Each structure stands twice: as structure tokens, then as C-alpha cells.
Length: 237
Image (cartoon, rainbow, N blue to C red):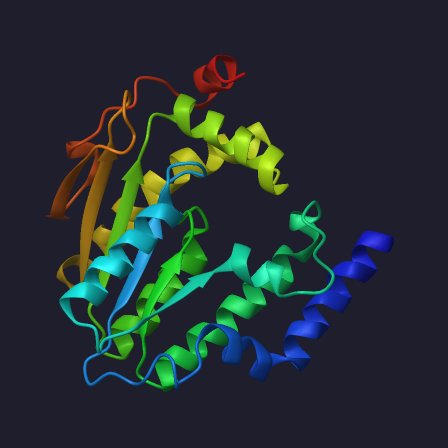
């Protein structure tokens, strides 16, 4: 009952404070309108290093064109702006954070801002909705799918939980690991040339080393997963 009340109050907070959320994450002074805005979506399992990669990508794009700014949209960062979030109740305020993501996405579309949406791509309907809206607005769309061996990604996820209090169950991790790959493949199949699918393969021995394959048709042509969900459940500790 207490959790339900907190969830409801968190959602209401986001609805009542849209201007504050927009001001914090996508204000027009810091992120001015673009003549030809684009959308980038991240994809991959928890712990694969999507946040780090996205920040590096934004930095590199800024160095190429300092006048072009990118609004980075991350549900985990939005949670930090919600008073009801205590670091350990992520699942309770998740609905409110998703609402915050929607608020910011609406804003960037209506104001011609560049956007990078950070997430796993495990929720197909939401991801497809984000792509469809960008395509509707004639925005170039790029997906960056990050692959890191799930044993290492799971270890990173567990360590992050201890440091930052962002818990995720093994079941949810495994589901996200497989769904992210399947969903980006399906998105490419659905939207075809309207989107660019890119895969970033992180080295198993040194995750800072990557192999980048641009504008591909199917992730499975570049990575091989040697186990199914049941086998992975037994492997991960």
C-alpha cells in the first residue's frame, strides 16, 4: 500500500513539475533548436556500458560541431530529480521516470532539439514509439547497440548496485540481455532504411576496447551468443 502511494505521488510530481524537468534536462537556452535535428537511441543489456558510451559519443559530436547540442534523456537521471526516489526504490518510481522521459521527448520534438535516448531497448513498444515519432518528424535516427559478454555485464551491474543502489534482478537482466538484441533487429526490419543500426562490440578482456560496425541490417551477423536464457541463468552468479 505504501509503495503504491509512493508510485502515484511520484507520477503526480512529474505531471505537476513538467516545466522544472524540462528546465533541468532540455532547456532551450542550453540546447537550442536545430535546423535538422536527429535522434540517437542506445540499446543493450544493463552493465554493457551504454551510459559511458553515450557520454563519449556526445562529447565527440560536440567536438565536431560545438554549436550543435544534444539532449541526453536517461530515466535513471530523471529518477534523481524525483523527491520520492531514495536510491533503493527504483522500481517504485520507474513509472514516474518513464513519464519524465515522455515529457522531455515531447519537448525535443516540438522544439527541434537533438536527442539521445539512453536505455536498454528491452521494451519494444516504447522503443518503436520513439522511433516512429522521430521518423514522423523526418529526423535521422541512429541506434547504437552495445554488446558486452553478459557475465562481465552482470558483474558490472552487481558492482553498480553496491555503489549506487540501482538494483536489478538476475531475471530482469537476462530478459533485457536477449530482448535488446531481438528488438533492435526487429526495429531495423520494420523501419528499414529510415534508421541506421550500429553495433558496438566490447572486448571481453578489455571492455574499453571496442569494434564498431556501422549501418548494419542485423546484429546476429556480428555477434554470437553461445547460450540461451536458461543456460545463462545457471552461469550467472
